[in-house]
Length: 207
Figure 1 (cartoon, rainbow, N blue to C red):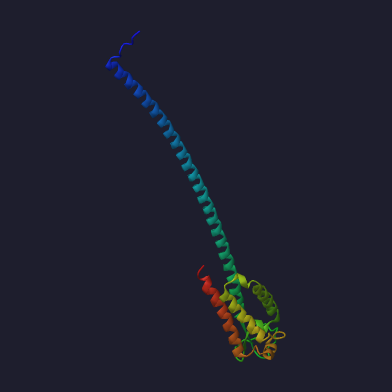
Figure 2 (spheres, rainbow, N blue to C red):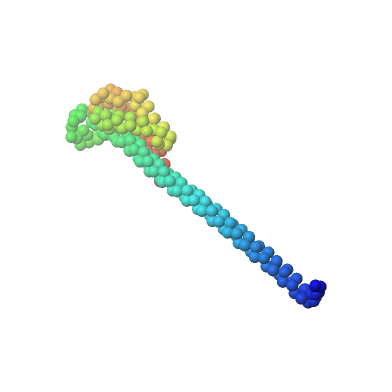
């Protein structure tokens, strides 16, 4: 049975339908692939953002911890400086004793400065010296916790005492025998203690 030729108009219509269908299928597949790629990119960006947030959180915690430690160190240094400063101030305390006055007298000056001798309180009183020695030993053991310039001034005070031992006992007579009643010795001692306080104050002024 002979096949009838398809009219040109019908053939063109059929070809258009075939091409259109193929293009539709291809476009649909492309859209699906693009949608999948977009999802993967979104997941990657979300993962990167999460890692970034975690890193920033860790850095913030580390910064907070470092700041806390810095505050604690600064506070500890402040108290250490105050201890060395107080040590220097106590070294500057002086007493005046009139020759011949009793060491236990309620008024060693006898109501007048005439003829009185100026002594560091430490040189005049054995009990005060005992406390000073205990404090000096403790401060010497924590020298690494304070500014080197302050500790150096502290060591100068101790070296002065090593070269001029404290009196044996209390009162003017004991101080005179040991050389601590000498005005030049007294002034040198006071000067070293002033230097210690001055160095501590120089750093404390920055707090």
